[in-house]
Length: 124
Image 1 (cartoon, rainbow, N blue to C red):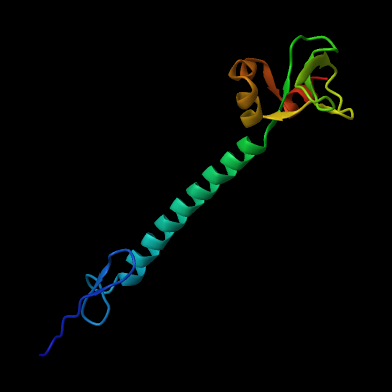
Image 2 (image 1 turned 90 degrees about the vertical axis):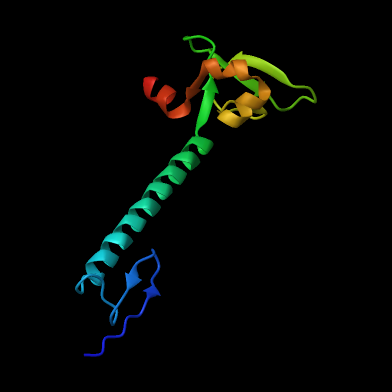
């Protein structure tokens, strides 16, 4: 009886022997398990990236008090950076919503008064 042993490495490091079988011919099952594990890793990465994108896009109000004129807004019409406490309504020349990155670049201390836009809008 002449048996030839071949060693071929498939993706994932699975060793194929004797006409492509592993341990009695269960290559398909082992390969399927490997592929499922790899797909799960990719799904985890995708979920992590989607969460990161959501966090990067999240907008915040800078809420100073709990009354109607409670929001810190940036006046964009002037040549100098001017802040006013006003409503959260978008009006020409004022920025009322900010990303975390923008808030941290302005002043890290402002992060303590940041309120997610959707959360604050649900309260009104």
